[in-house]
Length: 149
Image (cartoon, rainbow, N blue to C red):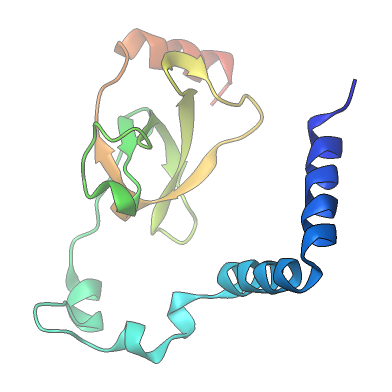
């Protein structure tokens, strides 16, 4: 039986054989896209009309959450829509040492109440979190005790 990784390697090799120059150009474009950091672009830092200045951002009150509080992680591309399919639900464990985020535990996609990972909490920026109850409080309490948090 051929593994998925072997099949991918075979497909990549066939693509290279069919058009070596095109394949190399495509791979270079992919690498360039992965290496691009918008924060290195001076235009990213320019103030636009209606955009908050760095000082205004610093003066904004930070979202605060308590350990055990249920949350939803709403990625930027979800535009605040808690029903977006990429939103992840879980609960807060503690604030990060830098104070700009929280270590959270998340439920498996489509299975609220089942931990995605038992190994560790995941650092999440505070600006991407909203309060959202996805399971009964007793479920969070159960996992809090079981994980000895």
